[in-house]
Amino acid sequence: MRRLKIFITNKQTIIGLCILSVLLVFAIFAPVISPGDPLFSKGAPIQRPNKEHIFGTDNMGRDVWAMIVWGSRISMVFAFGAAGISLIIGVVLGALSGYIGGVFDDIMSRIFEVFYIIPRTFLIILMVAIFGSSVTLMVIIVGATIWPSNAKIMRAQVLTLKSRTYVQAAEVAGGKRLSILFRHVVPNGIGPVLSNSTLQMAQAVLTEASLSFLGLGDPSVASWGKILQAGQSHISSAPWLVIIPGIVIALMLLAFNLLGTALQMTLNIKQQLIE
Amino acid sequence: MDFAKYIARRVLQMIPVIIAVTIFNFLIINFAPGDPVTVLAGENATQEYMDELREAYGLNEPILVRLKLYMQKLLKGDLGVSYTYRQPVANIIKEKMKVTLMLVLLSEIATIVVGTALGALAARHEGKTLDNIISNVSMMLYCMPVYWLGMLLILFFAVKLQWLPSSGMYSFGSQKYSKSVDLIRHLILPSLTLFLVRLPTYIKLTRSTVVEVAQEDYINSARAIGYSEKDVYKKHALPNALLPTVTVAGMSLSTVFSGALLTETVFSWPGMGRMIFDGVASRDYPIIMGGFLVTTILVVVGSLITDLIYMYLDPRVVHS
Image 1 (cartoon, rainbow over the protein chains, first blue to last red):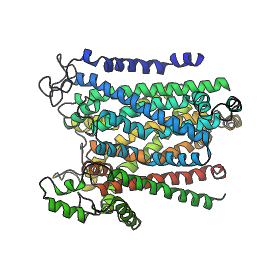
Image 2: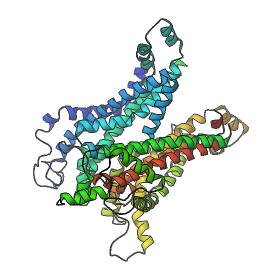
Image 3: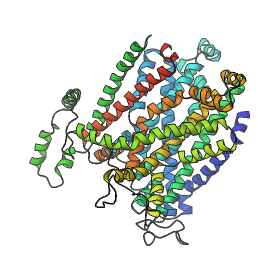
């Protein structure tokens, strides 16, 4: 409880949660806030921000405000989807590797290393180019490439926890090894993995925006990176196409980074309390 | 264990990683749907021409035979011939590598120096105004996508003030500047972008390690001996806090290259990042595989050099 209070009353947590709540409202209530298809032309192209289009229109006459509102959906899907997949893969593989040890651990550690070393951005671009750019597929691809840092952290946590008395007690009491690992060891060591996951949510959002910016995004959905892509070719005539979506992306990254940092700090405090 | 043995072991460890990555690249690309021959031949090609091309580029052979051929050629330093450039991949990469390094190297070194200095400065003034300013600005930069920052710089320095060119390596036609001055003018904005984007990494890292180190007993002893606060930080805290920075700098090679891809896109800089990206778009397999391989080797060698520097700075590493 004390930890929760420290986390909740942190200034960083409050700012992060405020930004995220606004964006979550956008994502959930997009059809109410901005009815109609955001990819449909709603007037003359390249209109400056005005009363009718508060963020202006892009080169195809699409309303930038509508694309911002709907774009929060795909960003949220990436944040939770890709970071979630990465969390599951990372926790399972890292925990097994640390708990079983021996040759298995050696092989797994090597695999983590190879995945860590492969130039990740290029790998993601390649896989998206090869296998297609539907949202589901891209979320899976991103999640399946960013998990090694989670696995490394989980493995280190399990290594320190598995010699604790309560784990040994559970083993002596005849518990099944797998159930001891996932019921007792993992829940106690998952904190740092969760704070890393929060930072990975920022990474996932950034990856989606970058892919869309490069023209590899899902063509059937509105995305912030797509507005930036249009902005790049109209930078001198329509600067709002560059400035507005960039601010929104930066705010979302800020929110996840603040929460991740706050979580890290809280966990350190927790460790200090124990010690 | 002595240094020579340690180095030999690390080098041996590198080889399987590189082989694994090579095979991985090869398989992914070869199991992909989409036929490179259609790219090569163009839209209105006849079946015969396409068959001829398939034969010429060895695309007819079974995959294992192709993998074997590819590995054999690799050992001779032959990366194959690009489908789109119709030139040996090794030559193209050599050329593009120079162009990317021009952009990346200087800005990364500047980032390391400035970022470390600012991080140490913030740590020394922990919790005070200066620390708040540095940390907040650094957090803001950290949250900016690299291409957005690049476009903002273009908007301000190229579109509004018209001081600098917005893209490319050289200006066409205009003879206003000599060739090297022209190149430098084109380099400023993309380098500045990479510099600013990488800055927070080093500021955050140095700040947190210096703050940690500053609580150690030997720092207090230095204070007790009577060193000035500035010397305590400069001569004792900072050198001991540099180890993580060395690691990050060594591991940063791959990040720098992927950051360079987006920066190269915004500024139309014809480097490695763009080359791989265009290669993916046109399914130019030899370019993609060559680009991946070279980047991977750079990363692996980077981590080896990191280890060696680490060993030099902290001999305990070898013995553990």
